Image 1 (cartoon, rainbow, N blue to C red):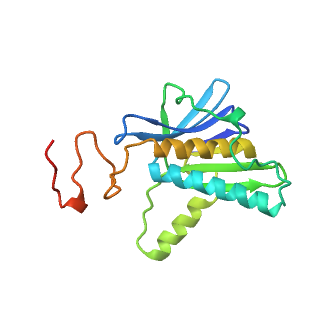
Image 2 (cartoon, one colour):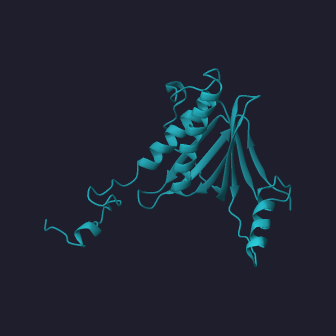
Image 3 (tube, helix red, strand yellow):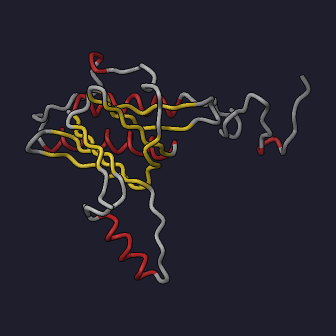
Length: 196
């Protein structure tokens, strides 16, 4: 079966968002262009890592070009997107591997999110070989979302993604673990709860 690549160059919209209540949220990347929308599920830590790496890569592009690249220092207000995910949110696949690159000729950020794949290997060598095959741009590989963004779109995506990650449950002031609406047993208090 041939690989399915969901390609957006450029998308009308590319955002990170969630479905569900804090503590039970499912995170998605969603790209749309015209009437076509692709949503892929991933972990909260993957969203945070992607946003941080995008900002780092854009900062490096600005540094290496001496400020000549079309990359704003912060997300421009005119491309800020605070709208919810487009409905219905239908998961195409769960993300396993992500990749980032800067296309210097086209002045675009390239983001790839590849489906999670189970690798069968009997030894470390077999596992390394299977991982290498997986990373090849093979026509029979797992499904992939590939998005090309301008510098401004990439900055706006990163800002929104970090805002979405940080919009969850507030941290406990003592242990920094998330506070649940049902209550919180804090390890720093050895499980002791004060009376109401």
